[in-house]
Length: 268
Image 1 (tube, one colour):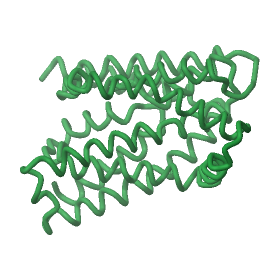
Image 2 (image 1 turned 90 degrees about the horizontal axis):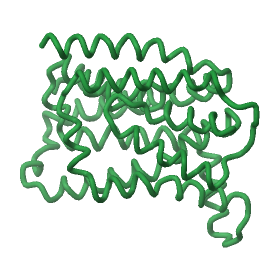
Image 3 (image 1 turned 90 degrees about the vertical axis):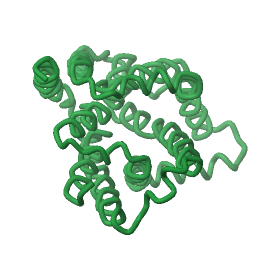
């Protein structure tokens, strides 16, 4: 993998992880367009996902610090209730990740028709934000379960995690800013968990013992930086777009890219 390819894939990961256009779908498209086999490299995957986590910590540092501090207060206060809701929302994705990982991996085979179809579904999901309820409140425990189930759907390449979870929260009557905050904070545990599992695979696989060679160091470094910087920018941008009610505009983009991906998949 060259430095330019690593930067491009890093930017794709950082931007699409937060913008409602599906990071997994765009990574699949990026690999197909660039023809980069190195994109499948486990070390590079770990790095760009680590950069994504770091960008969330940067944007939501005050929130995370407050929740973390309250956790050790051992009181059933508002912050610990919120932490419990975040944990509850992670249970569905945890179950799928632990017991159906192989089935999930089968979806990531470069099938552009599948990716395109899922991007169109994402566009339809984003249209639901125009039908949001007038009620504006904080996420409750029932909401957390439903939003967590919605996150499972976003496992498919082309289904946007942020778009699906935020749209679901808005449809349930959650306030815009609170929907975006919950959506981004709830992804921390799944990403960290998946990254740790991949670290385990990395250390166990003999083939990866020389992955981080000197020749690969610079592409990895630039890919990490690209994913981190673009992730911070996209996260902050998405927060503003949700507040302004403009994420529905991304539905047009998803429809267009989805149709193009399906056409390319049929042709080749």
